[in-house]
Image (cartoon, rainbow, N blue to C red; front, top):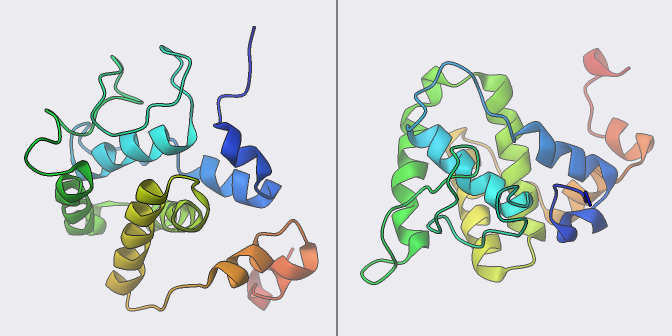
Length: 171
């Protein structure tokens, strides 16, 4: 029997926040399959999707899955350095590749990891993604959005959305 591909915790988010999470799932075309962007995306996908092969949540970027879409981002175990530290290699590479990554996708990912950084139920995963969010906004020389401001902007209210929209893009 089929069930949603998204993890249970995402179902309590606003519809707009769920939609933002899904916009970053596919990733951009034209980048190396095993480069920093794609390896970071594999871990991102594991944080919001259920493995179709195992029909369960994959809780770290190490566990073997057998596919490239939800595949491993790291090899070996955490016996020397923890995954949160080792994943920084992929975050670093992502930031170094930004000139080759479409800005449109970069904004989808930034907003999606912001949601993970505020809302993911596992503290270690939430803290990892919040740090990624901070690195992304700092790289753009911007300030972070508060969780309250994010919830107002992405709270399924047209008024909340329009309060932060530019006049040129209001529909």
